[in-house]
Image (cartoon, rainbow, N blue to C red; front, side, top):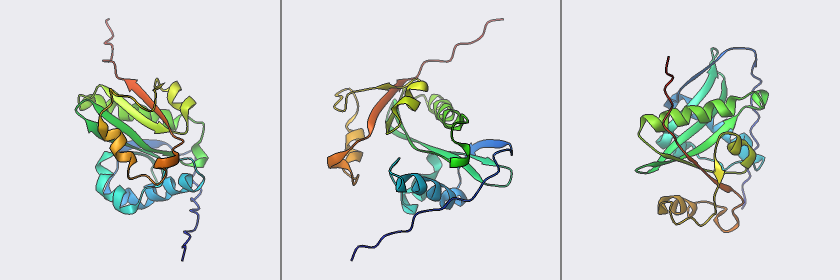
Length: 179
């Protein structure tokens, strides 16, 4: 028998409170799960299970207000020596269009640079957003990318009908200001 899970209803969040960017902890898993599921139910991203989030929570950054309410999240999953995937990027509907997605992507770039990575990859339905963040669309069959990218596709429920767009960004070293 097919069992349907109910759609997630997110709590209202005060968009006027200041936000902090921080590394996620295991206590954040339920809120991240609900936010990701909200967008997955709308067909805008892939759902992630509690178990997957718990095992990868060390990869996530979150934006929250001083009341502990989640405004956004993103994961950075290392896939090869010089490559990581930006994944699980989700913004609460109350904060859409306010630059939080860009803030989170910039956070992953900083995190990636600190790890010595040179390339960021993303599968997305939001090509224009990632282009604004400096990513470029790449062909789906790219021999220069490690097989780990496509290996993860074998676990996806949409592997035979994937509509996500592959995007890549080469990280440049930050330019130092000279006084």
